[in-house]
Length: 267
Ligand SMILES: C[S@@+](CC[C@H](N)C(=O)[O-])C[C@H]1O[C@@H](n2cnc3c(N)ncnc32)[C@H](O)[C@@H]1O
Image (tube, rainbow, N blue to C red; front, side):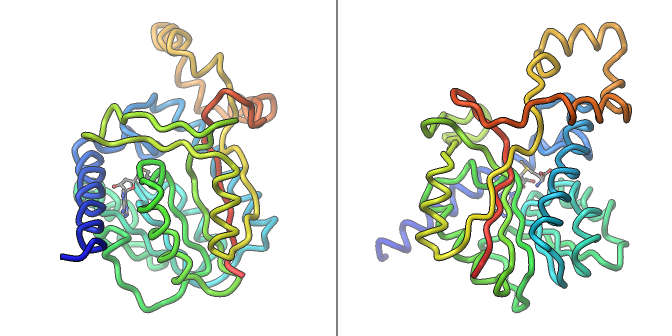
């Protein structure tokens, strides 16, 4: 066995553990990207993230035929992608999540669902957008690099590689995952993404916070109080969502880990 074969077996083992985690834990609601979250807050965040993403896609003049969402979960960005691309491919390797994904989107003529992980997925088509949300922060740098190389090779010239991931400022942080067995969470810096883009010969379009800070709302005590007062459903009201978007901070502040959209373009 060569070193690179042994290396890729280790990577595959890591990926299997990550996918097994999602398959067991599932996502807490159709609008959520994660297993442990408040479903009402996830509803608000999802509307805001779709709004922010739409603005970026418009700014970049995004449009085209094929779009690939890697690790689509329950497909919470699928409706948005349909406005910019004619054909959407949703990949989801966690069987239990995939079952729900197909029940939500399987009948849509613009959408194709596959029960596969990206690394083993084979597709001769090329794409105008490749998107991955909540996938790469669990990947080591080596795994991320081969993921990014494969994604870029599947893009059309000027195609967009778009990530929803986490940024740590001012320094990177690697923390043991509380959920994935022996796994780690890699919170990278804007500098990491700038260097990756330069190494891969692609353009870094932007790093933009995907949702506002709202520390007073994300506080566990506030959430429990609102739950007791049966007021948590207010996160689903248009006025509250608009206010959160308007008054919440989108600043990338030091000392924090932020959820961001990272836009990259193949040259
Ligand atoms: C944090 S969840 C995010 C779900 C969805 N993208 C969202 O933002 O709502 C990550 C998803 O990626 C999937 N995933 C993990 N590794 C993957 C891989 N190598 N290829 C494709 N999907 C993967 C998981 O099964 C899980 O459903």
